[in-house]
Amino acid sequence: MIRLVQIICFIVVNITLAQTTLKAKVIGIKDGDTVVVLDSLNNQTTLRLAEVDCSEKNQPFGTKAKQFTSDQIYLKTIKYVVTDIDRYGRNIAMIFYDTDNKYLSVEIIKAGMGWHYKRYSKSKELAVFEDKAKENKIGLWLDKNPIPPSAWRNKK
Image (tube, rainbow, N blue to C red; front, side, top):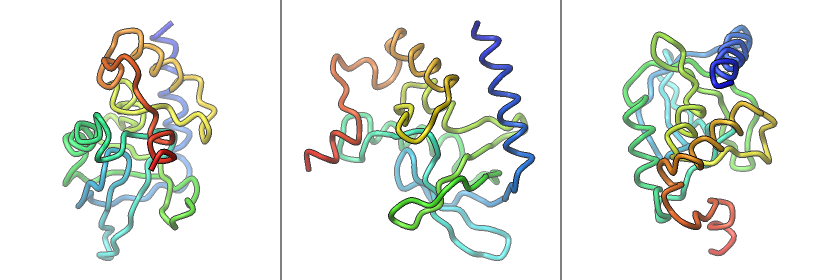
């Protein structure tokens, strides 16, 4: 079952990469799901990761999510596909990195460093990875009652 999910994710990633794919170097990590990139023309762009929502900075696992994202892509040249623009004017993007085109949102969810943002994603594969992380109590799922970032933000 997991192998089938991995194959499906691989196909989806490759289809997505066939769309308009941009390249840039990651020069900043704002939090687990927001990064700053610098393109070849020295333009800085803030990218909000698609399909995932990470804990806020002052929320449990917020610092760990930021560190995870940093460990994965900081100072690396990444490929990304803009899927939308959020209400703050940030580009929402699918980010791919390393030679095997890892999809950052998948890696975050598999590591238990973020929630599958079901409100903005219909990916059944990401839901499977989140369920597996919960089942195995990985990352934020160690907490008995983790609070989704959207609920955390609404409490403020």
